[in-house]
Length: 259
Image (tube, rainbow, N blue to C red):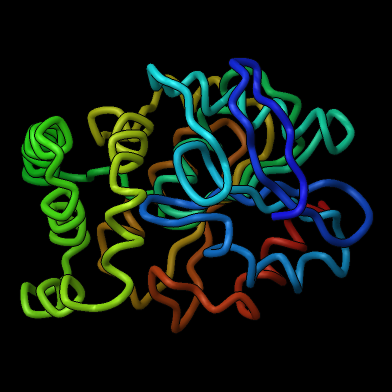
């Protein structure tokens, strides 16, 4: 990240931009930095000015206590202001929940697109989320960052053998470094349910996308988002999972943002 700006509370945010035209800000999800969404920036930058940034508490960005979801919305406001005062937003996974919250706050955005924002669609899922929040809070309070990462990976549905293999891999240290930010994404997701009241207040067009290779509840969540916003569109991408191919997703986003 070659540029820095300050958010309202003084937190330094690292970002970079590429391309020309209307601005599009890409918002990453949990356990990730701007590098995670950077591959999507390349095809989109052929038509837009695409902004990739490290959310607070991860990558090259700073952090300021105490955390509040409102501070992350202010981070997006600072980025939008830095690129001309108006932008479209794309958020993946829990980053989609942040993008939707930003739009609902009245941030000057033109469009919002989200990919597989993991809102719970059943009572069983809501109970699982509540248990995750409780255990995550305890693990981070006790400094057990590795356990916090394991909790998140289990929530995503990874097999235990895969999790233990990851714990022995060179990438684990980096995952533990940003583990405290798991609490931020957990806060952004609220209680995990679809925030219908918040979504109903969004006045800009919203595109909710999911892959047909992902679990059915991911598609149910995307459809629920599209149904809850006044100007929502639901789209399923054939052959895609939670890690969507940028070359498949980018044309869909570009068409939406240009509309």
